[in-house]
Length: 143
Image (cartoon, rainbow, N blue to C red):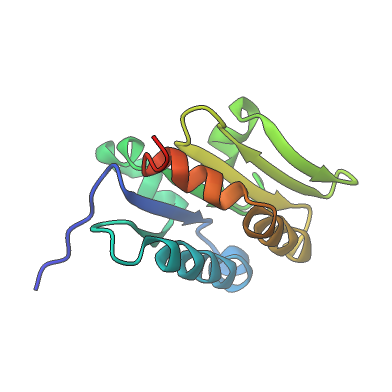
């Protein structure tokens, strides 16, 4: 059976391409995907999919998907492409960063100065309600 990815409702979780981001950031992305999938249960095409930065940067249709970058700009080319334009939603000690479009909900970046800080950014994103806000906007919940 062929799987269908709705460009408006499938959330891309983007990790860097390389040994370190694959080893350190991809597991964080899978945890975040699980949180997204739990919130999307019972809603058609409301799910998360983990992809690499090289995939999203080389696919013409990728810009249509809502996307969350995981990992610092130095290890994730997608983060490097979007982080300067995203408002800062949360930071701690210039080590942990949560950035998100809070009006359209199309892009977010979760990153830190090391793997532990990136994990903390993802945990804050979920725990403090930023994920739910992102999904409200992306999935047009509460609209």
